Image (cartoon, rainbow, N blue to C red; front, top):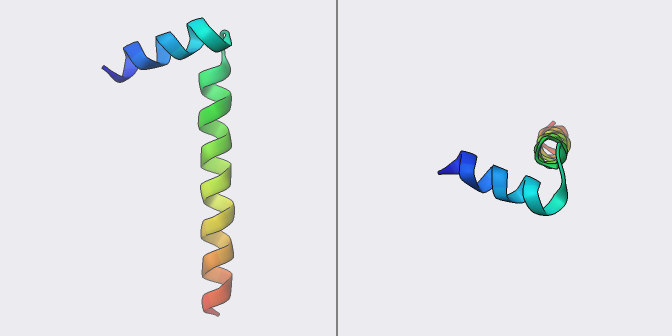
Length: 41
């Protein structure tokens, strides 16, 4: 099911866009996670 969703996204946005979106989300989560942990110090 997830693969079919990714295929549909690529049809609309273009090839490789799913990877860019996933990388952005991972970087964003890493940034906010680090920010939260820094505040706990």
